[in-house]
Image (cartoon, rainbow, N blue to C red; front, side, top):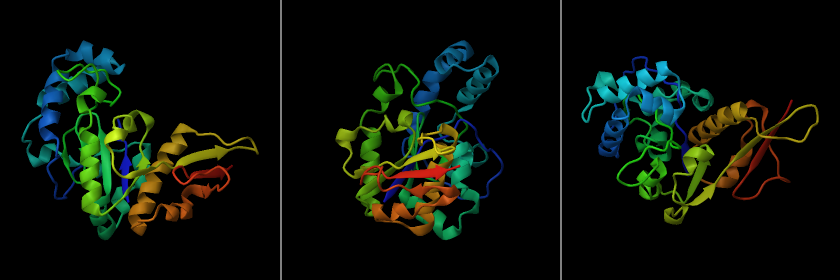
Length: 255
């Protein structure tokens, strides 16, 4: 199986003594960074609905973006992101074998980089996939990436010998995957919480963390069969057979 995650707005830029790989879409990232830079701070603030302070920070990042960055200016993607999903993944505590397996079986969707491997050398940025950044290819990043991400996922799945993509990404990011161009079957786990016997529902904060934990479960156990996802119990979640379908296993936590 190939598992995909969303990136995170929050970054961890602490030093990492880890060998990195070069992103497959580095050239595209340079183009997009240059395009975003032209907007200036006011344009970035409007584009991403962020504060003036964050707009200035991200303008500095785009202005510093390099086609061939020095190693100290980058971090491996799996360690660079630090949001709720990556709390659940907790990559720093994965053993060497699991991290090695992740190289072939984990991918991270990205508005700037398209698709990242775990140890791709990433420069600091913020550019959500849903941003309506106009380029020569259209009025949004969805238009820019077109079917490129799906083709890259097809290649990654073929190299891994996987015929299933486990979608642990958000709707915003998975929307960049052209389903007509994607060859593997898609399995999308759902994580729901029930409080005081109420009907279970998706709570974003908990679901993000659970998606990262599911990715970790897959990596730790080197899963290849989607049926084995049913064994996931991290954080108190339990597989719910009555609400599940083969392509959408549902996990519920009672609290």
